[in-house]
Length: 119
Image (cartoon, rainbow, N blue to C red; front, side, top):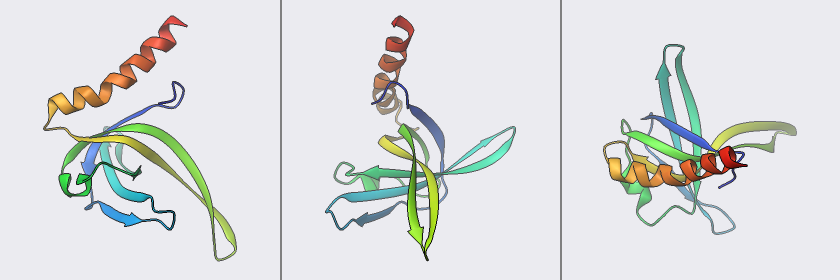
């Protein structure tokens, strides 16, 4: 994980995960995570490339999750027009109801933050 591009996102899955295989053979699992705070709600697209086997069956619409990953903006062409999408590329997606798994998912982030503090 990059020490300069780290994301911890906690929210609710607003739709069931979508799984597809890309032409390259890479498996892509996509989530829509909704966050809520005093400022309102936000929907954050999440892309998880080559997730562990069975990951698409672990989470369902309405589940509270923690996503650890990085922000990415990608560009693509649609109808001759260049468009972009900002998303979180997940390294781990964990159910909030599993605190031990959440702790394991957050450990690399803590290490990365500790490294920044000592440099």
